[in-house]
Amino acid sequence: MLAYLVRRLLWLPILLIIVSFITFALGYYGPADPIVALLGRHYDPEIAAQLAHEYGFDQPFFVQYVKYLGRIVHLDFGESIKYRNQPVLRLLIPRLLITIQLNAVSSFIGVVIGVGLGVFAALKRGRPTDRIVVFGVVFGRAVPVFVAGPILLFLFARMIPVLPAGGWNGIFSRSAILPVLLLSIGPMAIFARQTRAGMLEVMGQDYIRTARAKGMREMGVVIAHALRNAFIPLLTILGFLLGSLVEGTFLTETIFGIPGMGQFAFEALGGRDYPVIITVTLLVAIAYALGNLWVDLLYGFVDPRIRQA
Amino acid sequence: MSTQAKADLRTEMTGESTRPRRSLWGDVWLRLRRNRPAVVGLLVVILMYLTAIFAPLIAPYEFDQIDLDNVGAGPSLEHPMGTDELGRDVFSRVVWAARSAAFVSIAVAGFGLALGIFFGVLSGYLGGWVDTLIMRLGDVLFAFPGLLFVFFIAATIKPGLTAWLKAIGLDDLARSDYLDYLVVIIALSLVGWPGLARLIRGQLLSLKRREYILAAQAIGVPTWRIMRRHLLPNAMPPVIVAVSGGMGAIILSEATLSFLGIGLQPPNPSWGAMLYQYYPYWRHASLWPLLFIPAAILVVVVLAFSFLGDGLNEALNPQLD
Image (cartoon, rainbow over all chains, first blue to last red):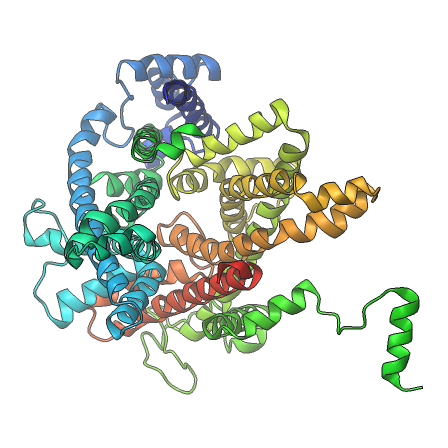
């Protein structure tokens, strides 16, 4: 376990350096000249050269990269090109907070309802209720966020106009209901499917029969014996969940006009504001790497068989 | 001599069985046919690719043909799905967009498979530091969640790619309508291969140690024959499942990129771009049905690919039942 932990932890900084290099290199060679984008109609070669010097764009690639790494270590991610003289991090933090709230609440609701539906379906195996859940899961996985979003808007802001169509008044306001619903569909479907599969497998095991034979109540069998063991494989999809949430956040925040990180990054993609694009990519990659590390360690902790391998 | 007797004699003399030969793929087809959702999925997928191939014959209009006298018209005989805010025929755009989706999915699956087989075989066959290097490279690409890296590549490579294409004299490809396709295909292929490479490497490593491979080696079967007769047929099923399931994911990714405005951009036809164009109409008095057209098509296509993928998975791995 210790060797595994050390290996995983050592890999992390290497990974981050490579990731930052890729994002920096693509940002350096790829995008349209941000100075041109910034100046627009007021383009003037002299001012452009001065700005390029100010931003350090006139220095060689590796000098810029090393300086960039040095700044990152001090949590200085540069300044946004669109919002002049504003550090990317200061622009990002309030938006990040909104995104984190939205994602946390959505995944919590999605996981709880998903696991509940999965257990329920597994216990009613083959009955109509099970079929409905299975069908819902297939459908939930097939409907992309950017298809479900406009349809939800149509249903709940037009047909039955009960909810606001966009904007953001905090996670406890009515404006959060539709985005949370939209973002929780994915986790709900995945967790319902995996829980159902896990429960069906576990319920056929000998120890369940033993527990029943000892006269344990069905509720106790399900919770204490079946669910505990069915939970283990669910941990692996937590990592997967992180990835799908990132993508969902981009789309959800764009559709509902939520001033979070996703919408900010979307704006930056359009405006070629590449200090922002690089920072968002880097931060999300770091969060994702840490999340996956955590899931792997948790998995090793819960299931001793993994540690041996 | 009766045919049966002839067959018996033949069996006796050559040692070949006369039991009707059922190939691996014949078996797969039999099992797939019994799975109703998979058959429906297959039919929808075939229909989509046929639509893509015959788009010029099916679509009554060009995808970018504007008719400003006929803006936002409802369904009629001339325009089966009505027209959009520029008077373009929606049905024609849907049909042409099938061609975009088919083209992107085949190109990305092809490049992804080629890169995946190349790196997977290299990794599994050579082992050692080559293996470590390739797998770590895959890990780095896996470190980017979901489509984020694809967004990032698609958003950044376009100007560089344009300059490069012009530099090597392919000015025609540098036109914006072709360039969008190139950007999407490159971005998705770059991210798609590590999964396949890992799968193929794993298959090779596990197959190399199987008894029947060892047995074949022991009785002196030539290496190329082992690869062709034993390794390849056994390594392929999971790859086929991954690729067929992956085609649906590729179409969805293309739609997502186009929805976000970094994939195929108007006037190029794409279901994702159409949805982005139409979704604000959810509150429009008469144009709102437009948003359900690309939405429904995307859902049906994604469902079809997932049914087909699940069906193939069961048909190729019968031990699952």
